[in-house]
Length: 95
Image (cartoon, rainbow, N blue to C red; front, side, top):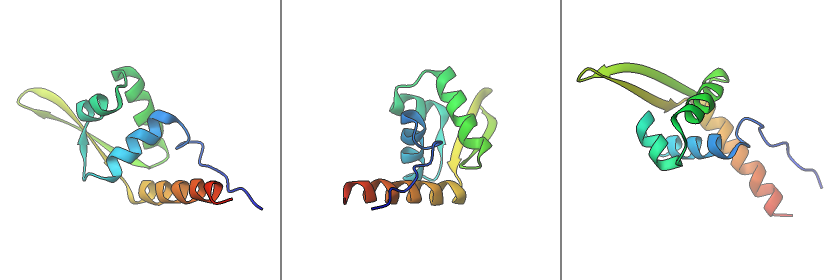
């Protein structure tokens, strides 16, 4: 029986939560992700940057009514990585 490697980027609880949220929506605001994951702004920012470094998410910063707005969107690479991660987890459960 062979165990598949789990993506260390997605194996973090918060990063996995972020990806789970983003895979179900077209894009999400930073504040929405923060509320849904109960993360602090600082920690969320660090984890989003780690996901961005490996091209799993795109982050767009803009202004809306003079307030900064940060939008996050999962990339095709991110979707593929997430699906591979889920399949690997399922293989662990089907032993």
